[in-house]
Length: 471
Image (cartoon, rainbow, N blue to C red; front, side, top):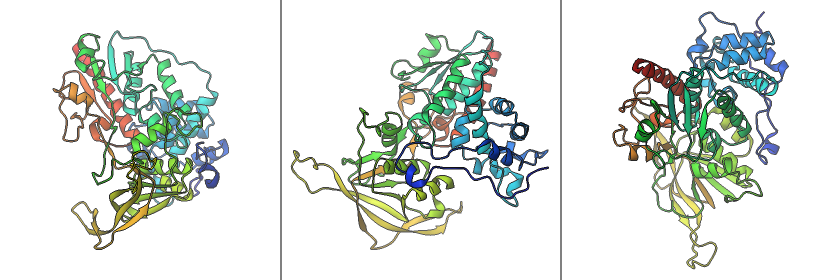
């Protein structure tokens, strides 16, 4: 009999006071008892609406049914047929707007906690599995993947399962893309990412790090000199945006990309780290998305006394996941909404020999109010008259979104792109260049991990068809 309880099993978490002082994972994961109880809430609907809400089409009822049978490895195998990164997606995928949003149980209560169950299954596999990965027979064809973020890893994994010799070229010294440089350890432990990468390597995927395509090699050279029959571009969107207000060049002003990369990838929070990072007392994070929450919560863990989220709309309009907002509030992050910075103010030190020379001291802001809804229903913020005020700060982190890095385009002029650098690709990922495909944030701009993975999977299928048709 299904468990007809209306609410989900809550996710166990670290105590907010303790976790705001460490970088250990906040969410602790379901116990076996909790997973079994939650799995029993699934009605195993015949029309399976949850699957339609999943960008990679995981057979959700089937893997949950395996959990009820205590066949956790079987559940993992069901998930892994569609997803190359189940332990990652179980942690950072916004299930509440995708698969869980379609769950029938959500009509009269809370939906089944699909994401938490996916994490439980993936973690069980990574802890208990003893079966070694078997490499598929090679089909004699080579494909290059540029970028080892979610889109690139998903594409590489699917192609490797089809027998392709896949080489992934990663610009940084570690594979994982945004999973390692963008998402903090307390949300996504890097050992989890490495384990998922190792699973792909076991399938036969080769990963070349410190390989900046566009500098060491061009896309044309990959195809003509190195014999890759197709190329997938999954380079993400790592070029930060700024407000272009006075004072953004002062010391103490970071892009969220730089701040998080120093902390996440370079481990600047460790006492023995060689990469410096500012340990500020008063920090303002400008923006309201998941990246803003990550930066604010990281600053808190680095010892900041006061951390503000400065956002020009209201709490209801914050684009971040509700779970991330709630965690930030629990950890003492201050939300300064309906507020917009207009200037970053310097110290009054004029002697270049003084350590405080060139640093910021405050942000000048204006209060905002929401106007009438536009055609899309969104209310635009409007500046309140005579509402200027100053907030004393010694650090500002700009979390305003990112654009694709222009390097690929600069060295591949025949590749069609949009105004902000997004690569133009059709529904299958085919670009304007013969045999070159693209997907993820490099095409759509900043989106979610699971949507990038979906694009990588779609492109893998299209690459397979392209190469087979050429043979």
